[in-house]
Image 1 (cartoon, rainbow, N blue to C red):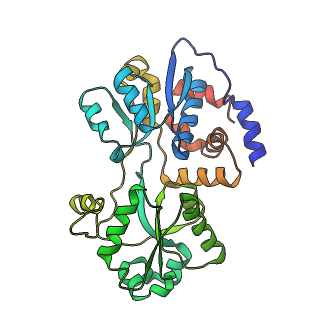
Image 2: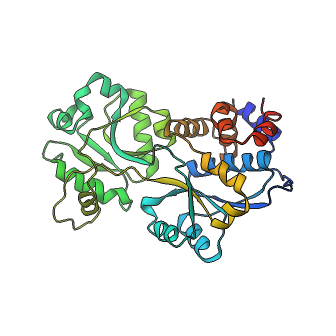
Image 3: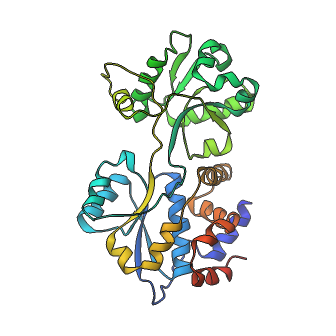
Length: 321
C-alpha cells in the first residue's frame, strides 16, 4: 500500500510547484506540529492547488506563534486546526474581527477521556463504569495509566482520581514518563489481551488502531473541571473532560479575496474515526504527512469530492480516477 501511495503522491504532484490559475492567487496555510493538523494541511494544500489553482505555501508553526502572527500581521491566511479550548485569545480575535471561523474541522471535536480496551469491555461490561472498576480493580490490573507529569491532563486526572476514590478502592495511579510509553502500554495490552485502564485522547493513531471504550463518568461541569485543573483545588469533584472545539479559521481578507477557496475550507471536515484510521495507517507504514494525505485522498474520494465546487470536481476527476 505504501508503494501505491508513494507512486500516487508523485502523480498527484504533492510537494511539487503548482502554477496558480488567474482565479486564485497566493495562499498561506499553517503546518502545525502534530499529526492530525499536518494531514489536514496537506489534504487542503492539494485540493486548493489542483482544484482551485491556488499557489499554496505551508508555514511550519505551532498554535501560539500562528495566532500571534495572525493578530499582528494578518498572516497566515488559513489556520488548519485550532483547539479553541486551549487557545484563550481565539475568541478575542473573533470578537475583534481579525479571524473568521470556517469549519469544525474535526466534527466530533477533540476527545479526552478514561478508557478500557474494547475486548475488556465485551468480556466485562461492568468495567465501563467507575463503580464497576472500583468493585473489581483486579480486572483492570489495579492500575490507572496516566499522562506524564507536567502535561495539562496531569492535575485534572489526579483530582478526578481522588474524587472518584480509586486509590481507596485499590487502583494505583501510574504516571508514564512520556507520551510514547503511554501509547506503548496500550499496544502491549492489546497484543497480550491484558487489562488496561487509563487516560488517552482522540483523534490519534493509537485509538485509530486499537478500539477503546470510554469509561462512563458524570457529565462535564465547567466549575468542577476548572477546579480540577488547579493543583490547589480545594474540593476535587468528578467531571468529564469537555469535548474540545477544533476548528479551521482564516483571516477576513482571505475569505473576501478567495471566496471559492474559503468555501472549500468550510466544507473540509473529518470525523475522528476517519482521521484516526488515516493516522493509524501512517504509523503502521512509517509514512510522511504528505503520504498520509494521499492515502486519505485515494481512500476517501466519496468524502472529499463532496467538498468541491463543480469546476474543481471536474479538474480533480481527471487526476484521481
